Image (cartoon, rainbow, N blue to C red; front, side):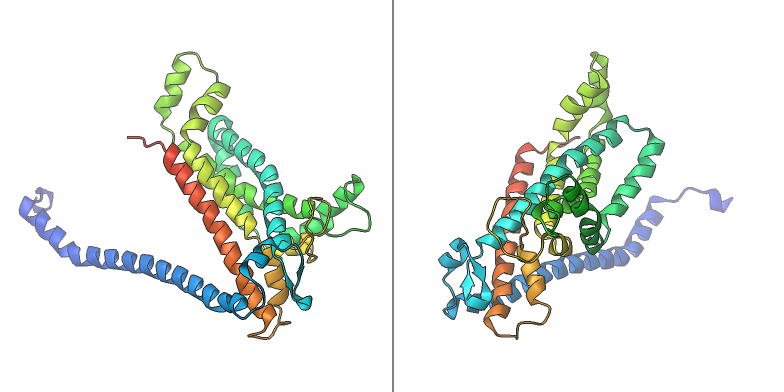
Amino acid sequence: MAADRPQSPGTAVIGRRRRRPLEQGVILLLGAAAVVSILVTVGIVYTLVEEGIPFFTDGNVSLWDFLTGTTWQPVNGLFGVLPLLVASLYIAGIAAVVAIPLGLGSAIYLSEYAPERVRQTVKPILELLAGMPTIVLGFFALDSVTPALQDLGIVEETQLFSALGAGIVVGVLITPLISSLSEDAMRAVPSAMREGAYGVGATKRVVATRIVFPAALSGITAGIVLGLSRAVGETMAVTLAAGTQPNLTWDPTAPMQTITAYIVQVSQGEAARGSVQYESIFAVGILLFVVTLVINIVAVRFVRRFRTVYQ
């Protein structure tokens, strides 16, 4: 029958030519999406710089005093940002201590040990936890984590806010992110590497820790850095759990105020546009942007150095 006749090469070429306008439209649409992403990033940077630079040029505080000052009291004209910066990095460090072992452990289990049915059930649950509203975790810290720390004698009975409680809930927040990305990186390792190791008598533990894990190191690192960037920029959970008291201390049980918590505090309408307090939120926003950018640059260099490409 005519319908069963093979398509001639000429007909196939004509079909491709007819599809070409649609393909070009899709390419233009994807290119426009990329351009919009770049423009949005440029717009964010421009807004931060335009609103934040007057904070330094109007004689409020010098850049050096801003970066090295140890007292943050905007109402008294003291703008030493170290308490906010140290609190942000300190809470992110506590979160890393919580999230990296849990995230990598669950990734290794899901990738190398878990049956396929268990993996298909557990991984969507982890990814669902990654999308949980952070304010919910903040209330979880106040209602569950802090009382548990008080019962253990770590935090005083009368103390409601602490960097430790905030770090724990932020660690819970970023654990699914690290776990999911790390598990994807480990699953991408070719099965031939596992089979070769099993062929020479390696155990599953050796294969998971000495073959698969090093081979997926670049992807695992990318997941960890993405989680840490999320932890540094976390807002509502740390605002509720750590408090709004800027303290420069290494005591994890003390209340602290992060950069994002200060932005939330001032953004509630207490500062008039053009005031020193209003300009200060853009100044600390620039600092937060730079810190996150440095973390990502270091991660990109690390990933490129240890990246493994499979053919």
